[in-house]
Image (tube, rainbow, N blue to C red; front, side, top):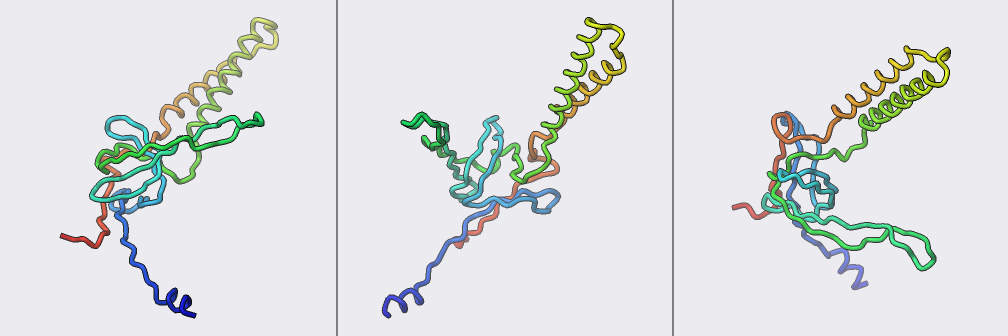
Length: 179
């Protein structure tokens, strides 16, 4: 009975963590806080894909796990965490954020068009050498056009959300220690 009352009267005070908001024209698109996963490129060009451990005083503390396939004694491979890296960055050092929301992969579609166009053009090229009566210049032109379209789509697809004119990061100090 004593344990029951002690559990009921037990209260804990959790300090809220700080937040970083990704905004487009003052509308919040994504919120980052402790426990979230984030993928971004720094202003120095480093690609970081890690979990947020803490956000405090304009600094993001990150933990990136090293996960690799390792062989077992039975000769089967399994994923294992071999170690981790700890980083800390000021939120102003983030140049590009890779969106974590699932969306259509335009770059993969461009690669499919490029591959299909190259195969079609090569097939028609081989056909022109092997048997000229089945050769179709229209199919060759279509293959080259598909490959070119795929290449353009791959090059123009988004590499992430660039922080700058449209998008900005806003640091929110949610701690109780106001000065």
